[in-house]
Amino acid sequence: MPEPDSGSRSGARAKSGAEGRAATEAATGAEIGAEPPGPFRVRPIATRRGPDPKQDRSARTRLLVLTAAAELFTARGFRHTSVQEVADRVGMTKGAVYFHYPTKEALAVAVVEQHYARWPLLLAGVAAEGHGPLETAERLLAGAALAFREDVVVQAGARLQVERPQIEAELPIPYLDWTELLTGLLTRAEALGELRAGVRPRVAARSLVAAFFGAQHISDVLRERADIVERWAETAELLFRAIRAD
Ligand code: LUB
Image (cartoon, rainbow, N blue to C red; front, side):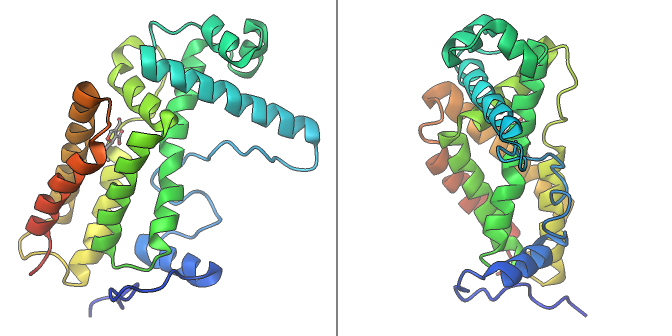
């Protein structure tokens, strides 16, 4: 017995809080508000940590330093970025930066973690629109392409992942979380009859991740990702036509 459709495909209106949460839970099978919906079990840096303004200030400073580091890592890469340059960019002393991030490696890990912390937020937004799982997957990747063009923390995380061999730190493992997330959505799509016969959810998920990685990397090298949205849209159109049931 196929699962009830988690959202009408006829241009469902954006759903409110409880409905939105229900739609997100339906699309991802994860409970919102608890631990970030898996995969991507990383939390965004919260700048409001509670009643203590000192903590808020510290969280805001961490975010400021992290964003400055992301700008430099994106432009110059890990090896050619110094903590002194990060400190200069935010008008702090190197010691003050080390207070928040004890090493340049710790900064790189934090930037990559915040790269992945973007995706549960994007997922919650797309899922709340109430589309079916296949359309949710398509809109999620389109949203990711936009983030790769616009968001310096996303761009820095991608560059640092490519430079993993040069970074002596435990960076989050790339690609696997996206593969898990897309496999989950495509498995639900299969249950709803949205997939073309013979398409295996995990194979399709790995193919989408490989294609997206390639599209964003080529766009980065050739155009600093200025055309990533268009390049991904043309690839996605082709791949989802192959995946979607007629
Ligand atoms: C994604 C990149 C670039 C996968 O998951 C990742 O780590 C990714 C950066 O490392 O593409 C495709 C959605």
